[in-house]
Image 1 (cartoon, rainbow, N blue to C red):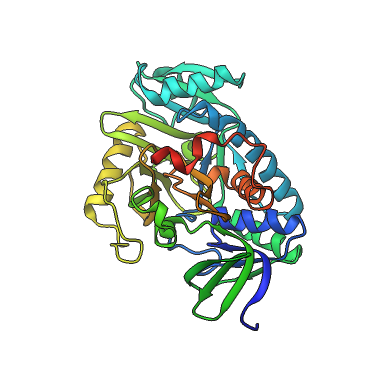
Image 2: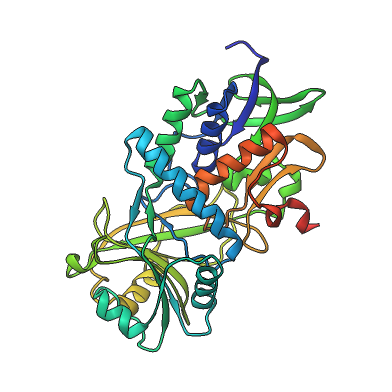
Length: 378
């Protein structure tokens, strides 16, 4: 391809958010280039791990509920169109002490948005779902539509749909630099120079390396996930074991039923609170990582702490308030940023792609994303 070939839009980073953005832009008839430094999909960032929770009961803030409602619609449309298995509905449990943010916030979001749900005691959860062993006096919100998204399948599906609509997507081509020009942007990679009217940056943990305004605002953090073999796998199958978020004295944890690979999966939010450079960090889980996860699952999910099946790392990219950044750069209306998804963003990827496409094409979106503006950190 000759240098300086012009596109309507370039998307930097073709992971969960970027693949959705390329797809939405291509669906609108734009000439789009997607650039990804690694494979598509890959395991080097934040968009892998076999399963990602999706839930309507949203304790982080009720404002997320309309976005996740739209995400369900878009994921189902994508699955129907591509034939890929993307969303699995297992039900979701959000639990903790009665005054915990996880329980109270989930209950609040359901009540404010008229989401069907049940409030259960820990004892009632354990009786209904025998894989659980919560303290009897804990409180839980059960919502039947919760479940998980398969991230690798989601990225592949968005990529295939984008390509079918005419998008050009290039893996293993890292972006070295971008520059604003009079009528757009110029992007330089190891393989060439590309010019476009608009630039969308969905670079995940590398976002601050591409945008000075994100330095100190979006911070990568080392995260570890574990899969352990249960003594009675039947109790931990998707039909009998809802995805969960749990607030405890040990911290806030989350987990999944057995799916696709052996073992019950769980993780701890902000695992060991290790901020990292995405180009220079310890990707190898160690004994401390394993112990944190094993001791937790032994206490709250009895019988699930058998042999280790798998340990893997990924990265959260956190903002100071744990909410996203979805905005146009204040000093360049041709550059749109989606970043800082703080460990709870993947479920929204289908909607985030729509929002970022709106901002790139129209400069605004009908989705209520005011709380995600970049200027809140000034």
